[in-house]
Length: 316
Image (cartoon, rainbow, N blue to C red):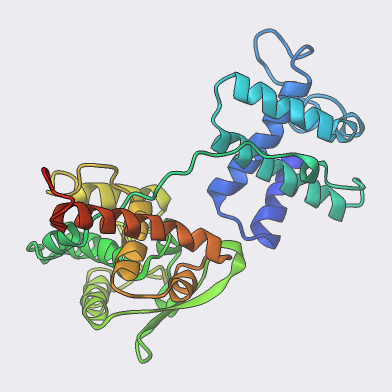
């Protein structure tokens, strides 16, 4: 196998990264070497065949993995208008690749660790209000398989905070009905249990009944199925959420599974859940990743204050 196949196999089997992350990391490596060999690449942009699509020999490429070259790669990307988030994602891919090479005993150290990462602009997570979600969930829903499945997918993400990939990869065995939990393996091969509120569990059981009735000969244990009985995929989850929320009051911004996940976390925090509990349910590796939701709560508090306090009103 070539470098890409070997590396992606490492990401898939050892790291259990999503297919999307696998491709992004492989692309980061490819872009780095294209930058290093930019003066020797064919004018028409065609890629050399050597090295599984990478320019140069393996020995030459290893020598180019230095902190100095990586700093130049980052500076070049920023000068060309790439945002800090994109460059940091590429550095993560390159760092993982260097760690992979360390395990292969062909690299002595990881040069990415010497790089100061570009500072990213802090952005508050988007979320849907509880009122908007309540209005959506109170809307009547059809009784056919597609309608019930689509409503259940939205309810599941908003009711558990699952990631898109976790929903797409969900199996029947992940649900423990007697305990009222989902037991899943999420990002970074981290296993966690997610409680299911009674109203959501009730809807899930209705969905599963209809699933079995609609596809009695189904051989896959995938939790959600396409209209033809196949396994769903990442874009499928995106499309369902977008279809379900488009045109409804309170959903004028981005309509995605990730915003639903943010809405779940924000709703928990606004209703008194502690950060550590939210961290565990979301599957975050550190509390810092969860603390971003406190900013949303503060903004909401500020809005209420400016609306309600007599001295904050106009003329006060």
